[in-house]
Length: 114
Image 1 (cartoon, helix red, strand yellow):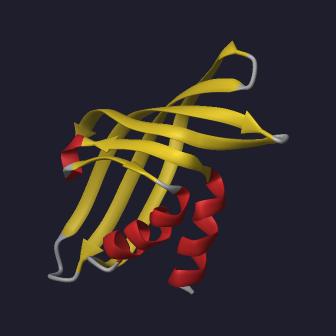
Image 2: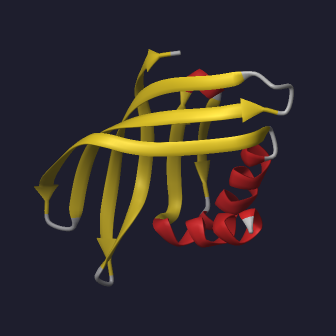
C-alpha cells in the first residue's frame, strides 16, 4: 500500500523538482521518477507517519505559476519508538502544464517547532 502511494505521489511533481528541506539534510534537484524511491526510503524510517497542511497562502506572480506558503504538521513514530511532532513552514512553487498543477520547488523556510 505504501509503495502504491509513493508511486502515485510522482504525479504531483514537475520534472525536475528542486527540494530543499534543511532540517532533514535534503537539498537536491530530483527527477519526477526519483521521487517515489525517496518517499519510500523516508517512509521506511517510521512505524507511523502523518503530514497535514494548514495556513495556506497562494499567490499567482505570473500566468501558469503559483507560489504557495504553507505550514506542515509532521507527526511520526520512529522504528526506535521515538515520537516526533514537528511544525515546518515551506514555500512551494507550482507550475501549470497541460491544464494540471505540479510542484516544481519545495523549500522549507522554517522549522517552527520540534
